[in-house]
Image 1 (cartoon, each protein chain N blue to C red):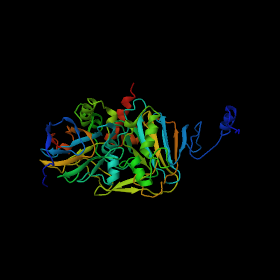
Image 2: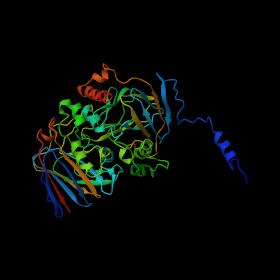
Image 3: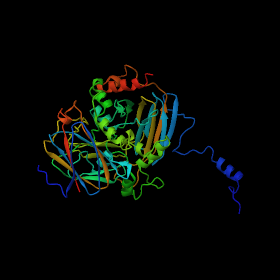
Length: 207
Length: 269
């Protein structure tokens, strides 16, 4: 699929290194484009209402309202108050995940063994960014994983499997309110969410 | 004109005359339950659209009963000692490689520990995907959704429940809905299982940590019935021990065993 030019003018353009956090304020009406530069790089994504960070992205409200697990083109990303925070206005990937959550040192010990506890994780990235902005562990909720693939089988079996993204594929998110976006460019190396090789992603904001 | 409550003596008599009143939805103190197989520590029937919260000790069995077939028991779970540790729905599903809850499954915290074990489940219809209703969704479905109205929403019920333990809006985390189910179609669509179901379906959970439990009993967010339909939830808890070393639930999977090891490590003090 092709990616169309962003509307308006690019006011911010940044490469987020592999394994790094990123935090940015996006005003209502602006569009954030995330570019999966090298392909199949999970981008763990949370957002908070800029004027009240107790209002935040809610995976469960979003799933219930659209009556579907997967985030596709046109999906409206809702807050825990049921209000639209951002919309997916275009994506060259068929769908994105919002049930898989973020990797953490602690969950890595369950999933892979205690030998992985010292590895860097998305929860560490989310906390690193959020704590600098006055938020903390209570602000961690179920997130979005752009460019990550979590199918659910008929018997409920689910898991993170090989991705369906590719180098240069994108997702465009239009802010429906002023939001603070917090991202972890996932450092996980124990499952295929990053193709076992975490890589940089590009963030472009157009006004 | 004088009334029986015109002065403090009359008001006191009026209030005291209510002593002994029984209604369906209320706690029983001291806790007793003829049908509990252990020393009862909590017995309460939660009203339709009601909520409750309770601290329970490690090892406690918590039985929930869908008394009349239309309970939706939405639940939050916190580590009572350190409530910043709470149920993590995403990890609960991902770590166990399955999206459906039933007997033998574990409820995991965001610190990689087992908070609760599902010991018995007669219902088989539960939901870890769709979460709590909110004021806006109840307003759309029923005309209003406020706590002071006749159609309260589960999220705002949770807010009142967590507040009793010094917690706030930021602590209302993604929840589990017991007794109302959601299955997932091949294309990701959510398929609700709303019932009504036969009365009396039971669910028995075991606390593997000292916990704060918060329950809200409001219609499921995917319930499309025009009327606000929900029936009482009965909660009973009795004393017990946490999972033993050779408990089959503890040793069933490598991921689960490591979660129990993490919980046991917390209490190695």
